[in-house]
Length: 193
Image (cartoon, rainbow, N blue to C red; front, top):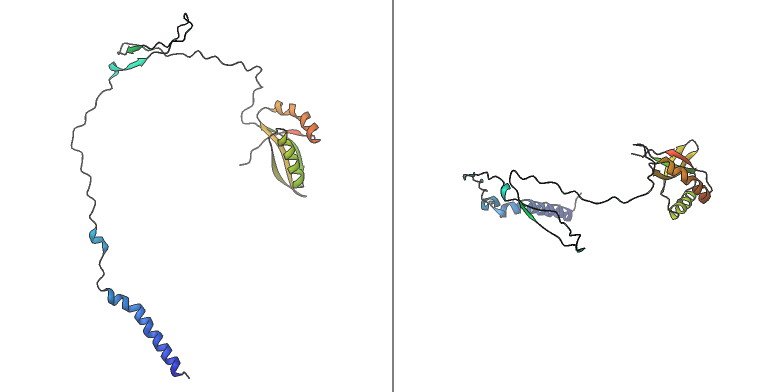
């Protein structure tokens, strides 16, 4: 059994809901669109004028001759000359007299698409790996790690390199053994994708 207070409460909530839903629509009246104030963008008019194709004025082209130095006076005075180019004039390219520096003995040639690394070992504990990496980087070696999965769990390989010339890595093996007390071996490098 409902009490008169509950009846009044339900009735007033229904009246309030009707007012909230329908009163704004009644008071607004006719809705006016804001689109009335906009004008359409006019189309671009087609070009009616004449187009002329002018040739490039090759006869008036001026070329600056290369800078020459007067060696007799031992003063470097720049001499600049201008040449009018006609269809019969041939222009010779200026060749630079830059000499290549002497580099000494060149390294052995690398084989295309092959790279090499020194594999120092595989370690289970990350602390040992971090200690070895710090020692290698402190002494100027480029080193990185690569995790591998084995039957006994995940191991971390420590690698030095990569380099394109295998013989240069072979020469580093004795110094690495002395530094790390680990006998490394040269292996082919396969980058991960």
